[in-house]
Image (cartoon, rainbow, N blue to C red; front, side, top):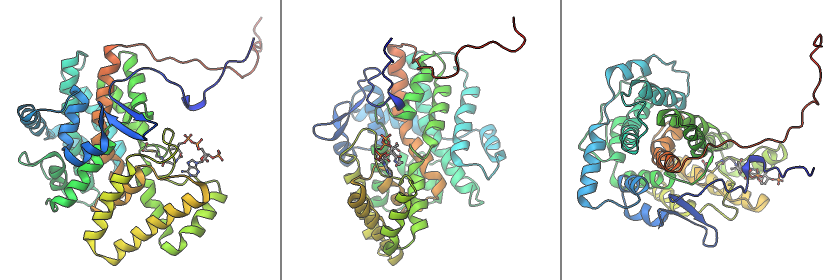
Length: 376
Ligand code: CMC
């Protein structure tokens, strides 16, 4: 018999259809429900994008008001959740806190067993509303500060700054943050979304699927890369060291964080708009330390293009942008979760609408059958 063809990492394998988003290879563009992501980022709020991903259409004014009112009402955490989160070791990564929180929400949710589309929509909105409250509390806990309750008078992005820092920065900064949320929201069958779909395909519940997806996003080859980018920039330290550092890292076969992509081989279509937002943050900071980091960031990008011809992915500009917005590095990937929760839950709904158990095959290359010692 001929050996089966193996697709390691499922590279190039088309597993199912989706109506949610696609990368159009010819134009190197990403669309959500048909709309180019750069236009959504430039013209729409993150709440509108969440509505689009879940319901297939941008909301009209009334729908948006209703969506915002429901999201804002669900933001607070109850005392039990706050106590549980406060008991987790301060040494654990905020992604572990977030994973635990999602799992706990699942244990607490009285509709746990009801996987109907309406119940799942309600759970998705609950997670969208509550995850920022968890992330902000964690950002503060790491600085020894008490949580700040959500403000229902503020939009999704503004409220997050308020809960993290006790104030809302100027609209330019909020806008850059919101752009990052829109760009991070959805990306077809990426590793964490596929994880959520695998869990869902067994007819398990939404919280279990999202808990697993948080785990998949944590890794540095996926969402963890935005934190790894910042650690790397701080490790290099000086723009003049960028080239020598890169040569050493490549010689040691290190993966350079924030570069390369499974789908985009000629550049991540989300990068130009995020780089633009980053440039605006750098310009408004007018601070020599910030300028030095931005110069280093550019120097490494040029060196990588020259040495390997490999382009940055979204995590490269987003990592530095989050640093300049004042967030601590360990909450960068949790911020990614606050956004990608929209894409994950859209895919969970889609998977359930035409479910097929996801269960691939493996080609066995272990030992031939043999007798257990002592067995007849
Ligand atoms: N640094 C150094 N070499 C790289 C990198 C990189 N970042 N990315 C790809 N390459 C090389 C790779 O070593 C391989 O070379 P060779 O053919 O000589 O062995 C070639 O390019 C093809 O790469 P690959 O590993 O086969 O590509 P892949 O599709 O399996 O990997 C990736 C994609 C994202 C895992 C990889 O590019 C990587 O590890 N990047 C760094 C981590 C990162 O930034 N992840 C974020 C991904 S995008 C957004 C997100 O999910 O958060």
